[in-house]
Length: 422
Length: 143
Image: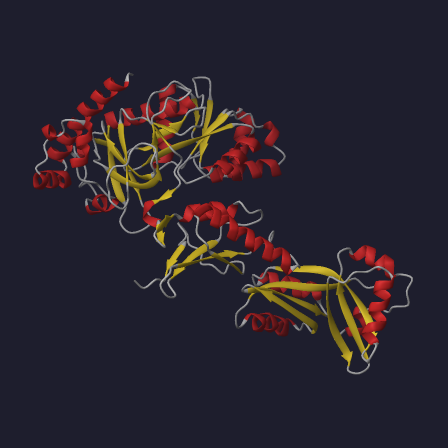
Protein backbone atom coordinates (compact mmCIF):
# COMPACT_ATOMS: atom_id res chain seq x y z
CA UNK A 1 0.00 0.00 0.00
CA UNK A 2 1.43 3.46 -0.89
CA UNK A 3 2.41 5.29 2.27
CA UNK A 4 0.02 8.23 1.80
CA UNK A 5 -2.90 5.81 1.54
CA UNK A 6 -1.65 4.01 4.62
CA UNK A 7 -1.46 7.32 6.52
CA UNK A 8 -5.04 8.10 5.55
CA UNK A 9 -6.22 4.70 6.63
CA UNK A 10 -4.40 5.07 9.94
CA UNK A 11 -5.91 8.53 10.53
CA UNK A 12 -9.41 7.31 9.81
CA UNK A 13 -8.94 4.31 12.11
CA UNK A 14 -7.36 6.43 14.83
CA UNK A 15 -10.39 8.74 14.87
CA UNK A 16 -12.68 5.73 15.08
CA UNK A 17 -10.65 4.32 17.97
CA UNK A 18 -10.85 7.67 19.79
CA UNK A 19 -14.60 7.68 19.27
CA UNK A 20 -15.02 4.07 20.41
CA UNK A 21 -12.86 4.52 23.50
CA UNK A 22 -14.21 7.97 24.38
CA UNK A 23 -17.82 6.84 24.19
CA UNK A 24 -17.55 3.45 25.84
CA UNK A 25 -14.50 2.99 28.06
CA UNK A 26 -15.07 4.76 31.41
CA UNK A 27 -11.35 5.47 31.82
CA UNK A 28 -11.06 7.26 28.47
CA UNK A 29 -14.53 8.82 28.71
CA UNK A 30 -13.47 10.74 31.79
CA UNK A 31 -9.98 11.63 30.54
CA UNK A 32 -11.19 12.81 27.13
CA UNK A 33 -13.93 14.90 28.75
CA UNK A 34 -11.39 16.56 31.08
CA UNK A 35 -8.99 17.18 28.20
CA UNK A 36 -11.76 18.18 25.78
CA UNK A 37 -10.77 15.55 23.23
CA UNK A 38 -13.17 14.49 20.49
CA UNK A 39 -12.58 12.37 17.39
CA UNK A 40 -12.64 15.64 15.44
CA UNK A 41 -9.66 16.91 17.48
CA UNK A 42 -7.55 14.45 15.51
CA UNK A 43 -6.91 16.30 12.27
CA UNK A 44 -3.66 14.61 11.37
CA UNK A 45 -1.65 11.67 12.68
CA UNK A 46 0.60 14.16 14.50
CA UNK A 47 -2.37 15.08 16.66
CA UNK A 48 -1.93 11.75 18.40
CA UNK A 49 0.37 13.78 20.69
CA UNK A 50 -2.75 15.37 22.17
CA UNK A 51 -3.98 12.03 23.44
CA UNK A 52 -3.11 10.82 26.94
CA UNK A 53 -0.84 7.85 27.57
CA UNK A 54 -2.20 4.61 28.96
CA UNK A 55 -0.10 2.68 31.47
CA UNK A 56 -0.27 -0.77 32.94
CA UNK A 57 -1.46 0.92 36.14
CA UNK A 58 -4.56 2.27 34.34
CA UNK A 59 -5.37 -1.27 33.23
CA UNK A 60 -4.90 -2.56 36.75
CA UNK A 61 -7.19 0.13 38.13
CA UNK A 62 -9.84 -0.95 35.64
CA UNK A 63 -9.66 -4.60 36.74
CA UNK A 64 -11.50 -6.66 35.64
CA UNK A 65 -13.74 -5.25 32.90
CA UNK A 66 -13.16 -1.49 33.27
CA UNK A 67 -11.23 -1.12 30.00
CA UNK A 68 -13.83 -2.86 27.82
CA UNK A 69 -15.46 -0.83 25.05
CA UNK A 70 -18.25 -3.35 24.47
CA UNK A 71 -20.69 -5.15 26.79
CA UNK A 72 -19.20 -8.32 28.26
CA UNK A 73 -21.69 -10.34 26.18
CA UNK A 74 -19.85 -9.24 23.02
CA UNK A 75 -16.54 -10.56 24.36
CA UNK A 76 -15.73 -14.07 23.13
CA UNK A 77 -12.35 -14.54 24.83
CA UNK A 78 -10.23 -12.95 27.51
CA UNK A 79 -6.55 -13.06 28.26
CA UNK A 80 -4.67 -11.77 31.26
CA UNK A 81 -1.16 -10.69 31.95
CA UNK A 82 0.04 -11.10 35.48
CA UNK A 83 3.01 -8.81 35.17
CA UNK A 84 5.46 -8.96 37.99
CA UNK A 85 3.44 -7.48 40.80
CA UNK A 86 -0.10 -7.23 42.08
CA UNK A 87 -3.41 -7.45 40.27
CA UNK A 88 -3.45 -8.93 36.80
CA UNK A 89 -4.75 -6.98 33.85
CA UNK A 90 -7.55 -8.27 31.65
CA UNK A 91 -8.06 -7.71 27.95
CA UNK A 92 -11.15 -8.79 26.03
CA UNK A 93 -11.48 -9.92 22.43
CA UNK A 94 -14.64 -9.61 20.34
CA UNK A 95 -15.15 -11.98 17.45
CA UNK A 96 -13.65 -9.41 15.10
CA UNK A 97 -10.63 -9.00 17.41
CA UNK A 98 -9.97 -12.73 17.19
CA UNK A 99 -10.15 -12.41 13.39
CA UNK A 100 -7.71 -9.54 13.52
CA UNK A 101 -5.36 -11.54 15.74
CA UNK A 102 -5.47 -14.49 13.34
CA UNK A 103 -4.74 -12.11 10.45
CA UNK A 104 -1.64 -10.45 11.99
CA UNK A 105 -0.34 -13.77 13.27
CA UNK A 106 -0.85 -15.32 9.82
CA UNK A 107 1.24 -12.47 8.38
CA UNK A 108 3.94 -13.16 10.99
CA UNK A 109 4.06 -16.89 10.35
CA UNK A 110 4.05 -16.32 6.58
CA UNK A 111 7.27 -14.34 7.02
CA UNK A 112 8.81 -17.49 8.49
CA UNK A 113 7.68 -19.42 5.41
CA UNK A 114 4.65 -21.10 6.97
CA UNK A 115 2.19 -22.22 4.26
CA UNK A 116 -0.62 -24.76 3.98
CA UNK A 117 2.03 -27.46 3.64
CA UNK A 118 3.87 -26.58 6.85
CA UNK A 119 3.73 -28.62 10.05
CA UNK A 120 3.96 -26.09 12.82
CA UNK A 121 4.72 -27.10 16.37
CA UNK A 122 3.41 -24.49 18.77
CA UNK A 123 5.52 -24.59 21.89
CA UNK A 124 4.03 -21.47 23.45
CA UNK A 125 1.87 -22.07 26.49
CA UNK A 126 -1.87 -22.34 25.88
CA UNK A 127 -4.12 -20.63 28.38
CA UNK A 128 -4.44 -17.11 29.70
CA UNK A 129 -1.00 -16.35 28.26
CA UNK A 130 -1.48 -15.03 24.71
CA UNK A 131 1.41 -16.93 23.10
CA UNK A 132 -0.29 -20.27 22.57
CA UNK A 133 -3.64 -19.17 21.14
CA UNK A 134 -2.14 -16.32 19.10
CA UNK A 135 0.01 -18.71 17.09
CA UNK A 136 -2.91 -21.13 16.97
CA UNK A 137 -5.27 -18.64 15.28
CA UNK A 138 -2.56 -17.53 12.83
CA UNK A 139 -1.69 -21.09 11.80
CA UNK A 140 -5.36 -21.94 11.33
CA UNK A 141 -5.90 -18.85 9.18
CA UNK A 142 -3.07 -20.04 6.92
CA UNK A 143 -4.37 -23.60 6.97
CA UNK A 144 -1.06 -25.06 8.11
CA UNK A 145 -0.98 -28.33 10.03
CA UNK A 146 -0.86 -27.21 13.62
CA UNK A 147 0.54 -29.27 16.51
CA UNK A 148 -0.84 -27.60 19.66
CA UNK A 149 1.69 -29.17 21.99
CA UNK A 150 1.96 -26.11 24.27
CA UNK A 151 5.01 -25.42 26.45
CA UNK A 152 7.14 -27.94 28.33
CA UNK A 153 7.48 -31.73 28.15
CA UNK A 154 10.78 -31.58 26.30
CA UNK A 155 11.11 -35.27 25.48
CA UNK A 156 7.71 -35.31 23.82
CA UNK A 157 8.49 -32.11 21.91
CA UNK A 158 11.57 -33.75 20.44
CA UNK A 159 9.84 -37.06 19.69
CA UNK A 160 7.02 -35.26 17.89
CA UNK A 161 9.44 -33.12 15.92
CA UNK A 162 11.20 -36.28 14.73
CA UNK A 163 8.11 -38.42 14.15
CA UNK A 164 5.90 -35.85 12.41
CA UNK A 165 8.69 -34.03 10.60
CA UNK A 166 7.80 -30.64 12.07
CA UNK A 167 8.87 -27.85 9.69
CA UNK A 168 8.26 -24.80 11.89
CA UNK A 169 8.41 -24.12 15.58
CA UNK A 170 7.20 -21.33 17.81
CA UNK A 171 8.48 -20.99 21.39
CA UNK A 172 10.64 -18.76 23.54
CA UNK A 173 14.27 -18.44 22.39
CA UNK A 174 15.59 -19.84 25.66
CA UNK A 175 13.37 -22.89 25.31
CA UNK A 176 14.54 -23.35 21.71
CA UNK A 177 18.11 -23.58 22.97
CA UNK A 178 17.06 -25.99 25.67
CA UNK A 179 15.32 -28.15 23.06
CA UNK A 180 18.45 -28.11 20.91
CA UNK A 181 20.59 -29.19 23.86
CA UNK A 182 18.22 -32.00 24.79
CA UNK A 183 17.85 -33.18 21.19
CA UNK A 184 21.62 -33.24 20.79
CA UNK A 185 22.02 -35.17 24.03
CA UNK A 186 19.48 -37.74 22.88
CA UNK A 187 21.35 -38.01 19.56
CA UNK A 188 18.23 -36.86 17.66
CA UNK A 189 19.20 -33.41 16.41
CA UNK A 190 20.00 -34.74 12.91
CA UNK A 191 16.51 -36.24 12.63
CA UNK A 192 14.85 -32.85 13.11
CA UNK A 193 13.68 -31.31 9.85
CA UNK A 194 12.89 -27.79 11.09
CA UNK A 195 13.25 -24.96 8.58
CA UNK A 196 12.35 -21.89 10.57
CA UNK A 197 10.78 -20.59 13.76
CA UNK A 198 9.30 -17.47 15.32
CA UNK A 199 10.79 -16.80 18.73
CA UNK A 200 9.72 -14.19 21.24
CA UNK A 201 7.96 -13.43 24.54
CA UNK A 202 11.31 -12.60 26.15
CA UNK A 203 14.30 -10.41 25.43
CA UNK A 204 17.03 -12.08 23.38
CA UNK A 205 20.10 -11.21 21.38
CA UNK A 206 21.76 -11.74 18.00
CA UNK A 207 24.14 -14.13 19.74
CA UNK A 208 21.22 -16.30 20.86
CA UNK A 209 19.83 -16.14 17.31
CA UNK A 210 23.15 -17.43 15.93
CA UNK A 211 23.08 -20.27 18.45
CA UNK A 212 19.53 -21.32 17.59
CA UNK A 213 20.18 -21.08 13.85
CA UNK A 214 23.39 -23.07 13.89
CA UNK A 215 22.23 -25.77 16.29
CA UNK A 216 19.00 -26.53 14.41
CA UNK A 217 20.19 -25.31 10.97
CA UNK A 218 17.12 -23.06 10.68
CA UNK A 219 16.10 -19.45 10.21
CA UNK A 220 15.21 -17.92 13.56
CA UNK A 221 12.93 -14.88 13.41
CA UNK A 222 12.02 -12.42 16.12
CA UNK A 223 8.34 -11.95 16.92
CA UNK A 224 6.95 -9.19 19.11
CA UNK A 225 3.69 -8.57 20.85
CA UNK A 226 2.07 -7.91 24.18
CA UNK A 227 -1.18 -8.86 25.82
CA UNK A 228 -2.30 -5.25 26.30
CA UNK A 229 -2.26 -4.67 22.53
CA UNK A 230 -3.31 -8.13 21.26
CA UNK A 231 -0.62 -10.71 22.09
CA UNK A 232 2.02 -11.93 19.64
CA UNK A 233 1.62 -10.55 16.13
CA UNK A 234 2.23 -6.85 16.65
CA UNK A 235 5.46 -7.14 14.66
CA UNK A 236 7.65 -9.84 13.12
CA UNK A 237 10.89 -10.07 11.20
CA UNK A 238 11.05 -10.98 7.54
CA UNK A 239 13.77 -13.25 6.17
CA UNK A 240 16.17 -10.28 5.95
CA UNK A 241 16.22 -10.01 9.77
CA UNK A 242 16.57 -6.29 9.57
CA UNK A 243 14.18 -5.22 12.30
CA UNK A 244 10.58 -6.28 12.96
CA UNK A 245 7.88 -5.13 10.57
CA UNK A 246 5.09 -3.57 12.61
CA UNK A 247 1.62 -4.23 11.24
CA UNK A 248 0.92 -0.54 11.41
CA UNK A 249 -2.42 -0.71 9.66
CA UNK A 250 -3.65 -2.18 12.96
CA UNK A 251 -1.14 -0.93 15.55
CA UNK A 252 0.16 2.62 15.43
CA UNK A 253 3.70 2.92 16.81
CA UNK A 254 5.51 5.89 18.32
CA UNK A 255 8.84 6.06 20.09
CA UNK A 256 9.01 8.55 22.93
CA UNK A 257 11.69 9.75 25.31
CA UNK A 258 10.94 8.00 28.62
CA UNK A 259 12.13 11.16 30.36
CA UNK A 260 10.37 14.01 28.54
CA UNK A 261 7.59 11.78 27.11
CA UNK A 262 7.99 13.68 23.82
CA UNK A 263 7.88 11.68 20.57
CA UNK A 264 11.34 11.04 19.06
CA UNK A 265 12.26 11.15 15.37
CA UNK A 266 12.68 7.92 13.41
CA UNK A 267 15.92 6.11 14.18
CA UNK A 268 16.24 7.44 17.72
CA UNK A 269 16.07 5.03 20.62
CA UNK A 270 13.35 5.38 23.21
CA UNK A 271 10.22 3.74 24.58
CA UNK A 272 7.73 2.13 22.23
CA UNK A 273 4.17 3.45 22.54
CA UNK A 274 1.39 1.63 20.71
CA UNK A 275 -2.17 2.60 19.83
CA UNK A 276 -4.57 -0.02 18.53
CA UNK A 277 -6.38 1.08 15.38
CA UNK A 278 -8.92 -1.71 14.96
CA UNK A 279 -9.38 -3.38 18.36
CA UNK A 280 -13.02 -3.47 19.43
CA UNK A 281 -12.95 -5.19 22.83
CA UNK A 282 -10.20 -3.27 24.57
CA UNK A 283 -9.01 -0.38 22.40
CA UNK A 284 -5.74 1.00 23.70
CA UNK A 285 -4.65 4.61 23.33
CA UNK A 286 -0.90 5.32 23.43
CA UNK A 287 -0.04 2.35 25.60
CA UNK A 288 3.42 2.71 27.14
CA UNK A 289 5.03 -0.66 26.47
CA UNK A 290 8.21 0.23 28.46
CA UNK A 291 10.12 -1.64 25.75
CA UNK A 292 13.14 0.19 24.36
CA UNK A 293 13.52 0.29 20.58
CA UNK A 294 13.74 2.61 17.56
CA UNK A 295 11.65 2.94 14.38
CA UNK A 296 13.01 2.70 10.84
CA UNK A 297 11.28 3.53 7.57
CA UNK A 298 14.00 2.94 4.98
CA UNK A 299 12.79 0.41 2.39
CA UNK A 300 13.33 -3.24 3.30
CA UNK A 301 14.77 -5.69 0.80
CA UNK A 302 11.64 -7.81 1.14
CA UNK A 303 9.56 -5.05 -0.47
CA UNK A 304 7.30 -4.41 2.51
CA UNK A 305 6.83 -0.67 3.04
CA UNK A 306 5.60 -0.80 6.64
CA UNK A 307 7.71 0.59 9.45
CA UNK A 308 10.24 -1.59 11.24
CA UNK A 309 11.27 -1.60 14.89
CA UNK A 310 14.72 -2.58 16.13
CA UNK A 311 15.17 -5.59 18.41
CA UNK A 312 14.09 -4.68 21.96
CA UNK A 313 17.19 -3.85 23.96
CA UNK A 314 15.77 -3.05 27.37
CA UNK A 315 12.90 -1.81 29.49
CA UNK A 316 12.40 1.80 30.41
CA UNK A 317 11.18 0.83 33.87
CA UNK A 318 14.52 -0.67 34.85
CA UNK A 319 16.68 1.93 33.25
CA UNK A 320 19.22 3.52 35.54
CA UNK A 321 20.84 6.90 35.40
CA UNK A 322 24.46 6.97 36.48
CA UNK A 323 26.54 10.13 36.34
CA UNK A 324 23.90 11.48 33.99
CA UNK A 325 24.18 8.54 31.59
CA UNK A 326 21.16 6.35 30.96
CA UNK A 327 21.95 2.67 30.99
CA UNK A 328 19.96 -0.54 30.91
CA UNK A 329 20.74 -3.68 32.88
CA UNK A 330 20.36 -5.58 29.62
CA UNK A 331 23.40 -3.77 28.19
CA UNK A 332 25.40 -4.98 31.13
CA UNK A 333 23.96 -8.46 30.85
CA UNK A 334 25.02 -8.69 27.22
CA UNK A 335 28.52 -7.47 28.04
CA UNK A 336 28.86 -10.04 30.83
CA UNK A 337 27.61 -12.94 28.74
CA UNK A 338 30.10 -12.20 25.97
CA UNK A 339 32.79 -13.48 28.31
CA UNK A 340 33.14 -17.22 27.94
CA UNK A 341 31.95 -19.35 30.81
CA UNK A 342 30.06 -16.57 32.58
CA UNK A 343 26.46 -17.26 33.60
CA UNK A 344 23.74 -14.62 33.82
CA UNK A 345 23.80 -14.39 37.60
CA UNK A 346 24.71 -10.84 38.42
CA UNK A 347 23.62 -7.83 40.38
CA UNK A 348 24.24 -4.15 39.88
CA UNK A 349 24.86 -2.04 42.96
CA UNK A 350 24.85 1.72 42.72
CA UNK A 351 26.24 3.92 45.43
CA UNK A 352 27.27 7.52 45.81
CA UNK A 353 30.17 7.47 48.27
CA UNK A 354 30.75 11.22 47.96
CA UNK A 355 29.59 13.24 44.99
CA UNK A 356 29.99 10.75 42.20
CA UNK A 357 27.92 7.69 41.42
CA UNK A 358 29.75 4.39 41.57
CA UNK A 359 28.58 1.21 40.00
CA UNK A 360 29.62 -2.21 41.13
CA UNK A 361 28.62 -5.30 39.20
CA UNK A 362 28.71 -8.49 41.20
CA UNK A 363 29.04 -11.61 39.10
CA UNK A 364 28.78 -15.11 40.46
CA UNK A 365 31.72 -17.30 39.65
CA UNK A 366 30.64 -20.31 37.60
CA UNK A 367 32.14 -23.76 37.35
CA UNK A 368 33.63 -22.90 33.99
CA UNK A 369 35.26 -19.73 35.30
CA UNK A 370 36.96 -21.30 38.30
CA UNK A 371 40.61 -22.11 38.03
CA UNK A 372 43.34 -23.01 40.49
CA UNK A 373 45.25 -20.04 39.32
CA UNK A 374 44.18 -16.74 40.76
CA UNK A 375 45.74 -14.99 37.77
CA UNK A 376 43.27 -16.62 35.38
CA UNK A 377 40.31 -15.63 37.49
CA UNK A 378 41.61 -12.11 37.84
CA UNK A 379 42.04 -11.91 34.05
CA UNK A 380 38.42 -12.99 33.60
CA UNK A 381 37.29 -10.36 36.08
CA UNK A 382 39.16 -7.67 34.21
CA UNK A 383 37.77 -8.86 30.87
CA UNK A 384 34.23 -8.53 32.24
CA UNK A 385 35.09 -5.05 33.50
CA UNK A 386 36.45 -3.98 30.13
CA UNK A 387 33.47 -5.45 28.28
CA UNK A 388 30.99 -3.54 30.41
CA UNK A 389 33.00 -0.37 30.07
CA UNK A 390 32.96 -0.71 26.29
CA UNK A 391 29.20 -1.27 26.30
CA UNK A 392 28.17 1.66 28.49
CA UNK A 393 31.14 4.02 28.39
CA UNK A 394 31.43 4.09 32.14
CA UNK A 395 34.04 2.66 34.44
CA UNK A 396 32.60 0.01 36.68
CA UNK A 397 33.97 -2.24 39.34
CA UNK A 398 33.35 -5.93 38.84
CA UNK A 399 33.44 -8.18 41.88
CA UNK A 400 33.35 -11.93 41.66
CA UNK A 401 31.14 -13.53 44.26
CA UNK A 402 30.54 -17.10 45.31
CA UNK A 403 28.08 -19.34 43.45
CA UNK A 404 24.41 -18.93 44.45
CA UNK A 405 25.25 -16.03 46.74
CA UNK A 406 23.07 -13.58 44.80
CA UNK A 407 19.34 -13.70 45.49
CA UNK A 408 17.28 -15.78 43.06
CA UNK A 409 13.65 -15.04 42.36
CA UNK A 410 10.92 -16.98 40.65
CA UNK A 411 10.12 -14.48 37.96
CA UNK A 412 12.23 -11.52 37.04
CA UNK A 413 15.39 -11.28 39.09
CA UNK A 414 16.05 -8.06 40.95
CA UNK A 415 19.14 -6.88 39.13
CA UNK A 416 19.62 -3.35 40.37
CA UNK A 417 20.14 -2.23 43.92
CA UNK A 418 20.27 1.51 44.16
CA UNK A 419 21.80 2.60 47.45
CA UNK A 420 22.20 6.25 46.51
CA UNK A 421 20.76 8.75 48.93
CA UNK A 422 19.82 11.76 46.89
CA UNK B 1 54.34 -42.13 44.38
CA UNK B 2 50.93 -41.32 45.91
CA UNK B 3 48.70 -39.04 43.89
CA UNK B 4 48.59 -36.05 46.23
CA UNK B 5 45.73 -33.69 45.56
CA UNK B 6 45.00 -30.27 46.95
CA UNK B 7 41.52 -28.83 47.32
CA UNK B 8 41.15 -25.30 45.89
CA UNK B 9 38.21 -23.18 46.94
CA UNK B 10 37.02 -19.85 45.57
CA UNK B 11 36.19 -17.42 48.32
CA UNK B 12 35.10 -13.84 48.58
CA UNK B 13 37.44 -11.85 50.73
CA UNK B 14 35.19 -11.28 53.72
CA UNK B 15 34.87 -12.40 57.33
CA UNK B 16 33.51 -15.86 57.99
CA UNK B 17 34.53 -17.66 54.79
CA UNK B 18 37.37 -19.76 56.21
CA UNK B 19 35.26 -20.28 59.30
CA UNK B 20 32.55 -21.85 57.15
CA UNK B 21 35.00 -24.11 55.33
CA UNK B 22 36.69 -25.28 58.50
CA UNK B 23 33.34 -25.87 60.19
CA UNK B 24 32.39 -28.28 57.41
CA UNK B 25 35.74 -30.05 57.80
CA UNK B 26 35.35 -30.29 61.54
CA UNK B 27 31.87 -31.83 61.22
CA UNK B 28 33.12 -34.34 58.66
CA UNK B 29 36.28 -35.27 60.55
CA UNK B 30 38.59 -33.96 57.85
CA UNK B 31 42.05 -32.97 59.01
CA UNK B 32 43.83 -30.02 57.42
CA UNK B 33 47.54 -30.67 56.93
CA UNK B 34 48.48 -27.47 55.15
CA UNK B 35 46.76 -24.33 53.94
CA UNK B 36 47.63 -21.51 51.58
CA UNK B 37 45.61 -18.38 50.87
CA UNK B 38 46.08 -15.96 47.99
CA UNK B 39 43.82 -13.00 47.41
CA UNK B 40 43.36 -10.09 45.09
CA UNK B 41 40.60 -7.58 44.28
CA UNK B 42 38.03 -8.83 46.76
CA UNK B 43 38.36 -12.55 46.17
CA UNK B 44 40.84 -15.29 46.75
CA UNK B 45 41.68 -18.94 46.41
CA UNK B 46 42.21 -21.10 49.46
CA UNK B 47 44.28 -24.20 48.85
CA UNK B 48 44.25 -27.03 51.30
CA UNK B 49 46.06 -30.30 51.75
CA UNK B 50 43.74 -32.57 53.75
CA UNK B 51 43.75 -36.19 54.74
CA UNK B 52 40.47 -37.00 52.93
CA UNK B 53 40.48 -34.92 49.77
CA UNK B 54 37.55 -36.59 47.97
CA UNK B 55 35.26 -36.20 50.97
CA UNK B 56 36.39 -32.59 51.39
CA UNK B 57 35.67 -31.90 47.72
CA UNK B 58 32.18 -33.43 47.89
CA UNK B 59 31.20 -31.68 51.08
CA UNK B 60 32.38 -28.26 49.90
CA UNK B 61 30.50 -28.71 46.63
CA UNK B 62 27.35 -29.72 48.49
CA UNK B 63 27.64 -26.51 50.45
CA UNK B 64 27.74 -24.43 47.30
CA UNK B 65 31.44 -23.63 47.05
CA UNK B 66 33.32 -23.41 43.76
CA UNK B 67 35.88 -26.11 44.36
CA UNK B 68 38.52 -27.99 42.44
CA UNK B 69 40.86 -30.93 43.05
CA UNK B 70 44.30 -30.82 41.50
CA UNK B 71 47.44 -32.85 41.85
CA UNK B 72 50.56 -31.38 43.45
CA UNK B 73 54.06 -32.63 44.20
CA UNK B 74 54.61 -33.18 47.91
CA UNK B 75 58.32 -33.49 48.50
CA UNK B 76 59.75 -34.41 51.89
CA UNK B 77 62.42 -32.14 53.35
CA UNK B 78 64.32 -31.62 56.57
CA UNK B 79 62.95 -28.87 58.82
CA UNK B 80 66.38 -27.47 59.44
CA UNK B 81 68.66 -24.91 57.77
CA UNK B 82 69.39 -26.00 54.22
CA UNK B 83 66.37 -28.33 54.04
CA UNK B 84 64.48 -26.29 51.46
CA UNK B 85 67.70 -25.66 49.54
CA UNK B 86 68.37 -29.39 49.16
CA UNK B 87 64.93 -29.99 47.71
CA UNK B 88 64.75 -26.96 45.39
CA UNK B 89 68.23 -27.72 44.18
CA UNK B 90 67.09 -31.14 42.97
CA UNK B 91 63.97 -29.66 41.43
CA UNK B 92 65.91 -27.05 39.47
CA UNK B 93 68.63 -29.52 38.48
CA UNK B 94 65.91 -31.64 36.91
CA UNK B 95 64.20 -28.71 35.19
CA UNK B 96 61.05 -28.56 37.35
CA UNK B 97 59.62 -25.03 37.60
CA UNK B 98 57.62 -24.07 40.69
CA UNK B 99 54.37 -22.23 39.90
CA UNK B 100 53.24 -21.98 43.50
CA UNK B 101 54.34 -23.64 46.73
CA UNK B 102 53.53 -23.94 50.41
CA UNK B 103 54.75 -26.02 53.30
CA UNK B 104 53.39 -28.67 55.65
CA UNK B 105 55.50 -29.12 58.76
CA UNK B 106 54.99 -32.61 60.20
CA UNK B 107 57.49 -32.54 63.02
CA UNK B 108 58.88 -29.19 64.02
CA UNK B 109 62.67 -29.01 63.56
CA UNK B 110 62.63 -32.45 61.96
CA UNK B 111 60.43 -33.15 58.98
CA UNK B 112 58.30 -31.11 56.55
CA UNK B 113 56.82 -31.32 53.04
CA UNK B 114 57.11 -28.81 50.27
CA UNK B 115 53.85 -28.76 48.30
CA UNK B 116 54.59 -27.70 44.77
CA UNK B 117 52.22 -26.77 41.98
CA UNK B 118 53.69 -27.28 38.55
CA UNK B 119 52.34 -26.74 35.02
CA UNK B 120 52.64 -30.37 33.91
CA UNK B 121 52.46 -32.77 36.84
CA UNK B 122 53.11 -35.96 34.85
CA UNK B 123 56.20 -34.52 33.25
CA UNK B 124 57.49 -33.29 36.61
CA UNK B 125 56.98 -36.73 38.18
CA UNK B 126 58.95 -38.28 35.36
CA UNK B 127 61.74 -35.74 35.69
CA UNK B 128 62.03 -36.50 39.41
CA UNK B 129 61.66 -40.29 39.21
CA UNK B 130 65.39 -41.02 39.26
CA UNK B 131 66.21 -38.69 42.14
CA UNK B 132 66.53 -39.62 45.79
CA UNK B 133 63.62 -37.37 46.86
CA UNK B 134 60.97 -38.86 49.17
CA UNK B 135 57.33 -38.09 48.63
CA UNK B 136 54.23 -37.78 50.77
CA UNK B 137 52.20 -40.96 51.47
CA UNK B 138 48.58 -40.74 52.63
CA UNK B 139 49.07 -43.91 54.70
CA UNK B 140 51.43 -42.05 57.02
CA UNK B 141 48.65 -39.63 57.94
CA UNK B 142 45.59 -41.77 58.57
CA UNK B 143 43.71 -40.46 61.53
